[in-house]
Length: 175
Picture 1 (tube, rainbow, N blue to C red):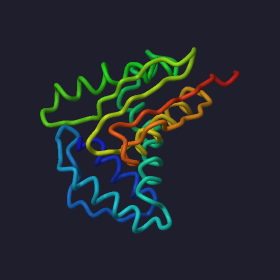
Picture 2 (cartoon, rainbow, N blue to C red):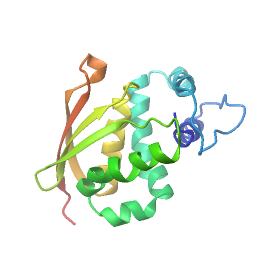
Picture 3 (cartoon, rainbow, N blue to C red):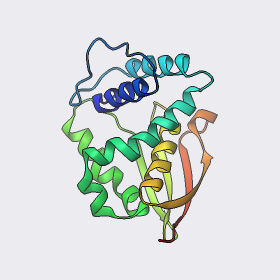
């Protein structure tokens, strides 16, 4: 798991009153065993009862999309300007770069196609099965771009499907 994700999950949990259990901060330029993610999630769920692991992942995904990623890459968000454009470019402009720049990093594979003028269909493949995190990222990105969405999971790895397929109907909110 990428250190940036772990660092920000730890920070996010602390804002919710969950004590940090990490002896030192994660390095944003390093890759860690996935067990570190599961440890943080388990602590969050234990302290934020009745929150489930899936709910916590979705809430954290929303936080990443609204707070963390825009502060790390403001030009990316400005350059794309719309919800659809942003999501259509994540795999090529972010995940591919992470894979080549950080050996051992394993962001999910996304195949995103346009759906109408504002929506997308996302095929998500990852052994981690962090589809709730993706749903939160999608919801947060929509909020960032002031776009109303309705996301439906046609397929879900957590339900036993080989990958996730998320259909996102979208329309830009009137100004």
